[in-house]
Amino acid sequence: MRLSRGWHLGMLAVWLAGSGCTALREIPRADYVERVPERPVRIVTRAGDSYELETARIEADSLVGFRRLDVEGAIEEFAVVRVPLDEVASISARRIDWYRTGLLGGAGVAAIVLGAARSSSNGATNTIPDCPRCP
Image (cartoon, rainbow, N blue to C red; front, top):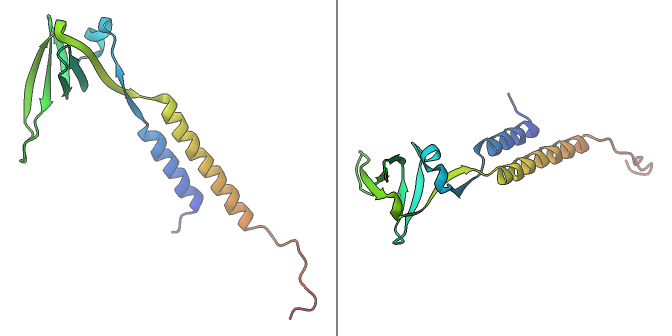
């Protein structure tokens, strides 16, 4: 079974739109309790230290999270990071950037339309009559 070029372009567009683009967005301090739990986050302390945490949660007056250690081996190792909320300068989390995703999806749709237009123009008949002197 041979699949058409348009089908391939359509699947490419679906894949690109489905993957989406993400951006690191800062979480407002008032929303820490609701938006931080069980999400991968990046925290920056007032001292300038930065931590990429796999999961985090707010416990009383501290942020507690787990960061992956760079060690070789079959088992991933994590370290517990505990930072007082007074020492946290900012917390950021990855979210879907709908603007970039829309641009990517629009580019995919444009590729499908152009591919379909090109394939339909290839099947057009020649409107110039044949030369009577040519064999």
